Length: 82
Length: 249
Length: 230
Image (tube, rainbow over all chains, first blue to last red; front, side, top):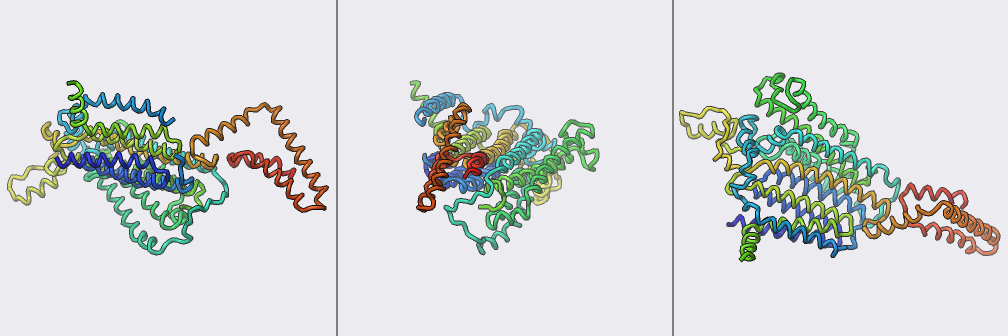
């Protein structure tokens, strides 16, 4: 029972993080909240028993993907119109 | 455009939700995916065929090794393409200074990173080598290794990281990873089996057929680790400096 | 009724699938509707991770453990040996890897979707890196990454490029004549006033600024023409 509550809670947080990442107008905030989204995914998969996938997502998704996005945004305009 | 694109999106959503009634319940042991003969064969026979306790690494590197080889090639091609796209970019354009960047690296950051980076690299090797028994393997170890170089590039400048790991050497290392992978496959073919049939390596190694698969899996994961580490650093270096590779973030 | 069982079956028992579908829709809508290119890429990544979540959740079995052999099924048997040595029984099970029975197979999570999704994650990050490189290049070339401004600039560039060569020659000849006239006026009247000399350069500078920013190779080509004149 506790696991189901945990699952539902993390899934709702996922939806909130996804919507936030797309809503804010500052691209740097978008990239960082996308990193939060990746970490929540990793947590969910580790709880579901997919440890290899969680490890890969923790390094690749929350590590490399966020850093590379921030590195790109530094050279672009940080404010987006929508 | 925003409201117009909402229509197909909602249509797809309604379709998917309507089809979702027929899904098996979450976590069902009797679901068709769990009862399928392929996955049951993998779970039951990995120990007998390959003597590797981690089923995911065994399936990734041995049973579905062809897949993994082409995935490594895809990562390599992505690195090449990033270099090609950003190579001919703005020549000598002054950087827009709307965020003030520090002139020299900070004392605390550099000394902490100097202590941490060797530990990260040893951990990367451990994850690579221990991927047979614990969660890990080639990809995770390679990405950790690449991340250690990115950490050096972030705390000092990009030039210091490039002096340790120049782009030409990165590409050589990445190519060597794929050659290693394909080389093990071709070696098995030359010894009489099929491509990537690691059991044939028992003819040159003094081990049994199953342990030959075990050791060849390690070699293959090392190849994957080389390529992924090099290409992660290439990706960061090119994106952070707009292809010029002169000054980083 | 039909409606009641639909709600209970779908939203209560299979709530996870509903949230996966919602995440998929968020990612898909972001790719279609957002105008900023980086937001589109974030939408693409959300879409990819939502699909990976769906696959991984298919592999879940209730009360099953992670897909790594437990100590008693470990093919190397060293774990089993340690366990039996601590118990110090005489009849130690000899080490040999055995094929698992179907009841034991049910106790492990399904490894096959995990393998497929490992590949998917790595390919996803490679694609993201490539797409971000393209975005940077577009910004260097056009100065903006909003889709509507980009379409504007492309339309204007198309218009200019698709004019007939006769009209282009006429326009260039006009421009050359006007710069010559301005230089002649400046040379004649430069003895009198200083701001008279400033005006023609302002006039030519205004003409150059009227063209929107193009990629560096194109600007160097167009700059080469007025350079010997001015």
